[in-house]
Length: 481
Image 1 (spheres, helix red, strand yellow):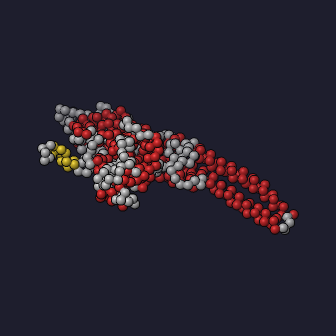
Image 2 (cartoon, helix red, strand yellow):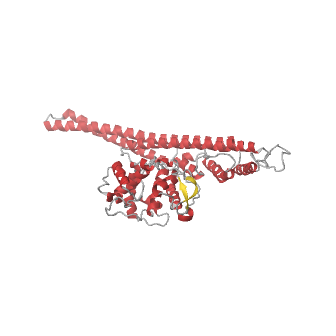
Image 3 (cartoon, rainbow, N blue to C red):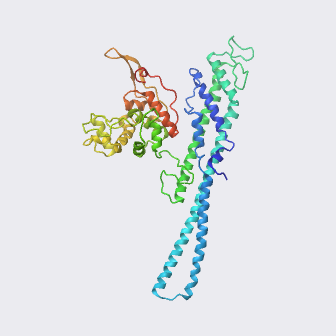
């Protein structure tokens, strides 16, 4: 039996090997930008992202859970010994008088003895259930380790058959062969500009560039896509199993279901979870702003409740939502909480809710009378709910729902520069998708887009979300970067 999840996951672990090969591939993907070798089926995740996903469960203290089980068992044993002593009282019935008081005392004794026996039975059941949780978790993590190792070995030893250095050389020589439109022909070859393809070590073979492209597509790009899909499925299944056993542990220990820890080393798995003040400060102050501890303590539970209410639950969604609020409000330090009630044309709250139609729609969706009390949109108790509604509502095209698994999203341009009525050139945009589309919904453009991306980078590390990828090149950069 292992003492911790880490001990289980570290047994013959191959995840570090997979991460190393994946990062090599990521470094060279741009070498194939116009080669027709497609990497789109490979998730935009780094080796660190896959390592973090694999390590979920490593901090579970299996020994601590089993110790809890043993304590419950010891308590039941000690209680049974006490009950056995108490039951010596049964012998007194032979000399018991039949007074009303004596009979009442005897009835109480019998009732309490039976109740104690039932409680001891429950204690034994709880002990067995807690031990079962530890066993189930160890089995789940063992299966995760075994399946992950099998996937990685199949990829590296069965398909790639390269050392890390040879794999990098394979990509470099393959790209060179494709770019040069190598004619191949084997030894002697065709043409004068020959590029050897080191598909299984140096010096390589003189392949036709189409054959090189096919090999890289099938034996590298498609193989990695399959492995990533399998690893993602393994991690999802394990996370679900851990969550189910966490619920069983809470039930066995008679602890209400909720996000709080159990004290037995099991962190709750799942999507929503709490937002702590420290996490909020880390995100909001990452670009030099000064959100105070007091405000963070006030805002964090309100934001957590707002996100939960509107289904903002995945790491990518939470990171994107908080990054947008951070960019709009200077890290939640530059927005008014006491805007006078002066109609609907005053922007209020962290997203600056404006317009009678928006006030009416938000109020109707959230059960708030904003039409008669527009100033409520500046109250933090309502402002964060309104912000969460805004990015998840049909009124804004559900920008949050289009976020998917992260990424800047689709290119938003409908055309290049066009000329306005005043002769000034400007870019014409569509809505886009992903983080970029959300930015346009909230901001109306991409003002401060780089700051938004940097806030997201901090937030995604807090929540374990995937990166956005390279910054897009925007015409706005020269005006509002």
